[in-house]
Length: 259
Image (tube, rainbow, N blue to C red; front, top):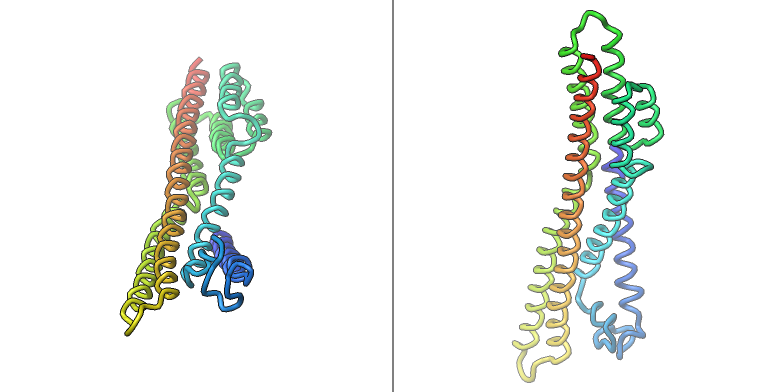
């Protein structure tokens, strides 16, 4: 529910901002030789404005990319916790090797983040199982491992949130850019097809519209693809580190329980 509300808010706000940029900034009469007619640009901003109604949509997609990139960076930094993740994991392992399970749990509480939450879940489960004298060491370890795996499966979707949206934006931006290009070329050919001398202004506007939409579509698509690949790699590295740390935690607990 919160995710859908967040995405809806991002879409509405970025679209409103994109339309404002396109009309009030890029479409400022000062950017055109003919003023409010907005047909003959005299700088790059006016030229971008003449790209047509697809331009604000492409600007919206670019702004959505940037918004989601900042959101993912913040979320992944929060998932790491307060201290550097490798240092935290080594600290927990040292405490467990010394048999200080309670101190390891307190370290998880202090660290916070997804990795700390997963390891804390396993340690809490382990403490509960140790109190049950009916269970043997192998059963305790299997139950501890299962609780860690369940916690990991709950945290992973949070780490991967909005990555599909970035990938989708990249695809939509490419298609939207091609649509704008096609519309611009249609306008250019219409100007050429008119009886008598071709309308030079409409011809130039059509060509500009085609090229501008192509450029903006490729820009939005490249940002989306690069962001998607970057965050996918970070999430994969993060989950690998958690899996390795969880395995080490279980092995340490297993060793201590058999001593």
